[in-house]
Every structure is written in structure tokens, then in C-alpha cells.
Length: 193
Image (cartoon, rainbow, N blue to C red; front, side, top):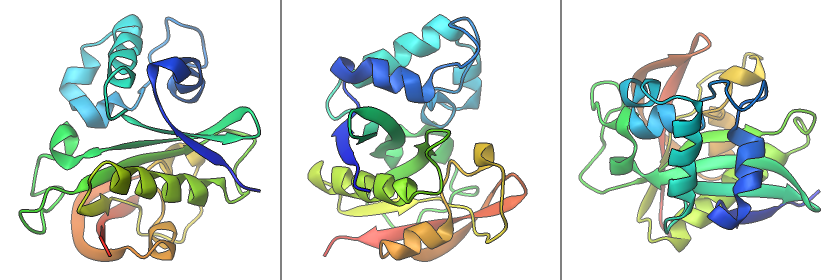
């Protein structure tokens, strides 16, 4: 089952909202992938409307803030992808060690739509995020997946799993001081060929 991967542009914002927006109504607070991009403090100051507007603004820029995955005409996945320097939560080198002075592109969120999981779509989203990074000039790509084989609730698996990244040729280069759902995250890298 192959997915089509497209940039998350303003023209596709309805699909971005399907993947990232609140499920309990427009006034509910959802992450919108801003917690990492803007930092926890900055994003917590935004109400529901401000969050939506901030992501719309990001989708109006080039390159877009990530990619969308489609199965036939239905949006089924999302990945946040950006240069590391544009992701506030990755700025702390003690929490997320820097390996060298090269500016990596970072894949920091992978989401598969509920009801579509366990069909290989997540791996295709990761592959699409890698292709998007190379197409936008990445010299190296980083991910910060969970280093676990334990089954976790889907809400905790947004960083991806180490095994997913290894399938795409990434290698572990550092440990982090970050945990999600009780699982430690690692820094993994993919160098350009």
C-alpha cells in the first residue's frame, strides 16, 4: 500500500488541520507540532486560534513545515521536518547533544492517523520526510526516536522508533536526556550519499 507524500502547504491546510488540529472542537488546545518547534513555554502561551494561525503561517512559507501522506485521496499521515536551528526544543545540547557543526535537518514528529496504523504507513512517512529533507538541501538528517521495543500507546510514539530509523539507514550517534512514555530517546543520523 503506497502513500503519496506532499508538502504541507497552505493549499493543503485542511489536511494539516485533520492531522494536527484538536479532535474535541475548534476551541480545544492541541499541540499542532508547535511544542517542539516554538518551545514548550512559547507554545503554551498560544490559545487554540493562535496555534492554528501559527501553523497556517508556517504552511504559507517555503519550505513547508512538514509533509502529509495520502492513501488514495485521504490524508493518513504527517511529519514535522525542519532545520534543527528552527526547532526550539532541540536547542539544549545537554538534552539533545550536537554531534558536530553541520546543521542537520530534523525529523521530530511522525503521525499516522488513527485507524490507519500498523499498515506500514509510518515507515513511508519517514521515508517521505527523508526525501523532503534532501530535496530542501539537507547535508545530514537527524531523528530523535524512542529506543525501545516495548509496545507504547500511540500518543507516545510521535518521535518514531529506533528500528524505523535503522531501516532507513540511520545510525545512533548519541543518547539524549529526553524520555517519552517512559522510553529514552536517542539521536540518530543519516549522512548524504
